[in-house]
Every structure is written in C-alpha cells, then in structure tokens.
Length: 192
Image (cartoon, rainbow, N blue to C red; front, side, top):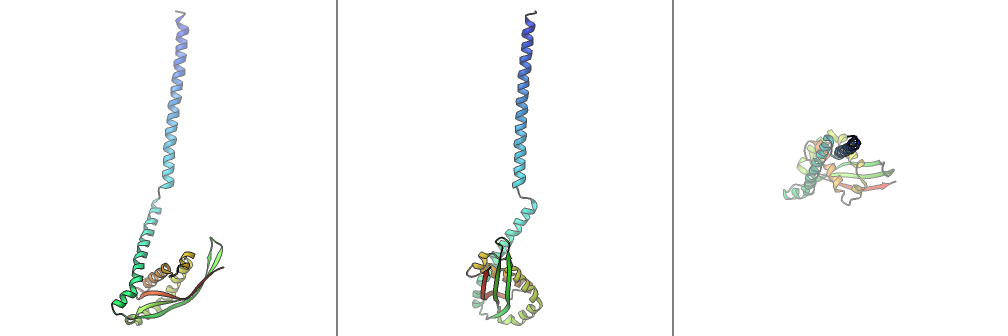
C-alpha cells in the first residue's frame, strides 16, 4: 500500500491543479462577460439620446415642418393675391443698422437694410393699428432673427430663410397674417 500512497498524492495534486486551472478559466470567462456587458451598457448610455434630447429633436422637427409650411405660404402669397384680385400695398416695417458678433470666427458683422411688407389694401388701416401696438416687439424679433442668422443665410441671393422667419414672427405678433411677404431694400452686410 505504500506504493499507492505516493501515486494517490500525485493524483490528488494533479486534480487540485486541474480544478484550480478550471476555476481560473471560469473566473476569466465571467470577468470577460461582465466587461462586455459593462461596455455595452456604457455605449448605450453614451449614444442613446436622453428624454430631453428626444424632446428637443421633436421640437426641431416640428419647427422645420412649420418653416416648410411658411415657406410655401410666403412664396405663394403674391400669386394668391393676384389670383384673388387683391391689391397689395408696400408698408415699411423699419430701417435697421445691426452689428452682430460671430464668436466662432471672432468677427463682427454689420447688417444694414430697409424692410418692407406687402399688405392687402383692404387691411391696411387694421394693419397699421396693430403694427403701432406691436412695433417694438416686431423690431426686436427682426433684430434677433438677423443676429442669429448664419453667414450662409445672409449670403443667399433671395434671403429666403430670413424672409420666412421674419414673416412668420411678425404675423404671430400681429395676431393675424396681415403681412403677405417681406422684402429687403438697400441690403448690405460686411464682415469685419
């Protein structure tokens, strides 16, 4: 029996080593799986938008849809007036001299223009009364629109996006779409 005891001890020792290696492999596999799960959770947290981001995207999409509707309306306003045999009258909405700092390029933009609106002849007195009540707020919205405009928007030949924004904001403040379209005269901008 003495001969079996050393073999038994060697066998026990080999089994303990084998089971230790098996346990360490299992432990390594568990750690790898946990790291993969943690990595997936981290990526999901980093790239899945939060509720606030989702709401902001919804508002942005709604704003774009509204701009597209306003664009179609502004482009067709004069044509509709002609088709409905409505006479449109130009009314001056103001003369503007604006300086706007552009932080990304560390430059200042100087924008000068006169703004005119086309109003139906039959609504001119009503428009003038409403405009007089809201003139300062309308001027403020025009200033905000121009100061927030990109160089690309200001360089666009027809200034379409800026016109649509001004038209929309002005008519909202007037509580009725008196202004059918807006036009710039003596428009210039210089980047300094």
